[in-house]
Amino acid sequence: MNDLPTIPDSADSADAAASAAQSASAKPAPDTSAPQAAASVTPPPSTPPAPPPPPVASAKNEMHRPLVIAVVALGVLLAAQTWSSHNQVRKLREEMARRLQQGDIVNTETGKVMRGVQDGTRELQIKVGMLENKQVEAQSQQLALEQLYQDLSKNRDEWALAEIEQVLSTASQQLQLAGNVSGALIALQNADRSLSRSDKPQFITIRRAIAKDTEKLKALPSVDTVGLAVRLDNVMAQVDTLPMLADEKPTLPAQPDRKAKVQPKPPVKGAKGAKDAPPVEESTPWLAQAHDVWDAWSSDMWTDVRQLIRVRSVETPDALMLSPSQAYFLRENLKLRLLNARMALLSRNEAAFRSDLIAAQEALTRYFDTRAKTTQSVQALLRQVQTSNLAIEMPTLADSLNAVRNYKAKP
Image (cartoon, one colour):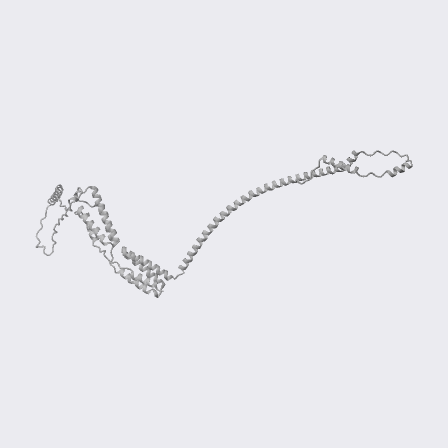
């Protein structure tokens, strides 16, 4: 745009016209001497006078006219060119602004799309991570299932022997710790039944060992553990009703039963010795009735007299000085002793069983009234329980366990 031609000034155009006029006047004039000589010889004819030469200003105007036209045409062209350039620049600016606006819109939409893509990518990454975790879990489960399948595909005899070994081991522990003979017998019978289902000659050695251990258990002396435990429970239930030496009114000893009077029967007629029998004197009814009333009144009076003054022989005087709270704790302590004896009975602990029973009997003899019937019955129950023999050496199931383990160790 800066290289476009510009319109020349008017002064420059006037200078150009003057230089052109000077160049025209400098041309040589035509030679007119010969006609002039001829005219002097012969008189010229009468001719009209020549027109005067045109003025110089008109010649200059005629010379400047094409230049003005050219300048005007050039100006019109320049104006047209300028207008066209301005239109093109305006159109270029509008197009540039429109394209820039479209570019901004496209950039905004691209940013939104990019953010959506990033969010989608992030979600896809999370899902891919979850799928990878699930894949790892599925692989681990697959490995576990494969291992389980391999274990299940093993020989059924191995599984049966492993189960029998576990059952026998548990039964042996119960037999040694708690003396559970019945449980051990049930375990041996179940093991023998499981081996009998397979019906294989290789298991004969194991079945022989199981039968030998079963005979050992059956030969053991039976101890009525349940019956002894029930007796101890009965004793514990009666502890609260037992009279103590510290009570205000101790129980009196039991009265002897009166002997009923037996009237002699009259002799039977015709019987042998009837003649030799002395005659029986018949007593009057009112005399017998008076005798019974006298006996009843005298016995009641004697009982009342005996309750006025009581003399007791007590080896432990401190048993008479117990307060009610001490008596309560004494009864609870006796219950705990009996409960410990019961637990020792169930666990086959003979030493603890006998020591607790001895301590309970000593407490009964020292602090309770042994002349009462309830106390005597409780002592009798404890003596019966104490006579039971718990010192039974329990056999082991080592033969059966060794037979099973030796069979499993074979290649």
